[in-house]
Image (cartoon, rainbow, N blue to C red; front, side, top):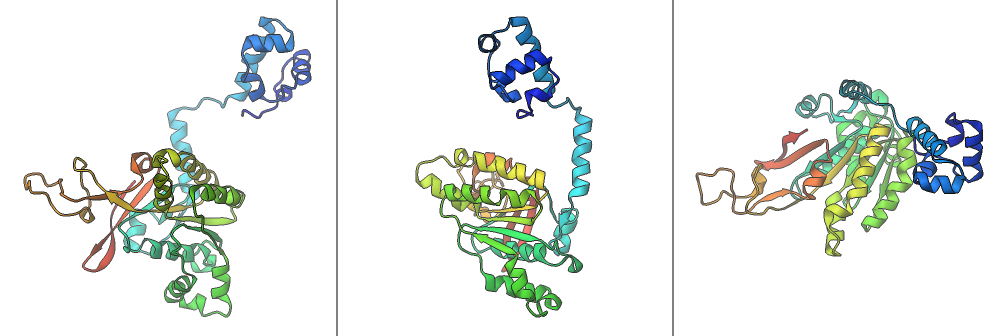
Amino acid sequence: MANKLVREMGLPEPIAAIFAARNIITAKDALSLTEFELMELLDVGLKEVSSAIDHISKMASPPPQTGLSLMEQHIHHEQLGGHLPTRLKGLDEALCGGIPFGVLTELVGPAGIGKTQFCLKLSVLASLPSSFGGLDGQVVYIDVEFKFSSKRLIEIGAKSFPQVFSMKGMAQEMAGRILVLRPHSLSEFTESLQQIKVSLLTQQVKLLVIDSMAALASGESEQGVPTQNSLGWHISFLKSVAEFSRVPIVVTNQVRSQSSDETCLYTFQGGRSKDTNDASRYDSHLVAALGIHWAHSVTIRLILESKSGHSEIINFCR
């Protein structure tokens, strides 16, 4: 709305001509100046300036909406958005169909729990031909920790979909649909996002994976940049791209040590404290990294744990 042209807003012709002559082209140009600055620049009276600014403000502002209409739009987008099925029956049922489009889904768990393997499986599913239940699209895989393995990807695909990967050249074609980016810093990650923005918004990409966001942020923290502050732009960018492109975005997150006054929720958070009357306290804890600001930015958080030697998704928050 801010870039809407002043000449297209229906102002009286004499006033519109003066705005154009003074190089005030967009609503942003006009509204960035005070009324007195406009009076001096345009050489017109306060009444004319106030009337013009009032008209431009009304034309540039989005129409008011009720809470009900916003809720109905959200439900409509959810219905149109769809899901990327994980082929894990219990998880797909809990998520009403799979990883939802248009939001951020986070995988949290300790190292070696299988977060990367899960992301590789989702990459296979997103690039799989639609006739076999896939999204038949491209995948952008941002591999921060250099854990992406083409060999492992094909092994997962061949085991899960032998009828597809047994076709001549299909394994190479599927692998060719996955673009792997390996930024070494948060600034390089920013550049990577800018490069893939057009592909995301034009529906060429069907899945974006970031493995892992915490690794990027930890590098900035070591240089003295506060983690949450350094991620502010990236959080806004990812949420807006997810919403407008309706692409599922999956981000892995590491775990960190928990302070003694925080509450434990998951069994990977350590052993019980000496105070047996307080079941929520632990001597040594682990919690999801990146802090509360990031936690409020993700729509779905999947918690991975190891039980009896097997990885399980033991909880999810929405």
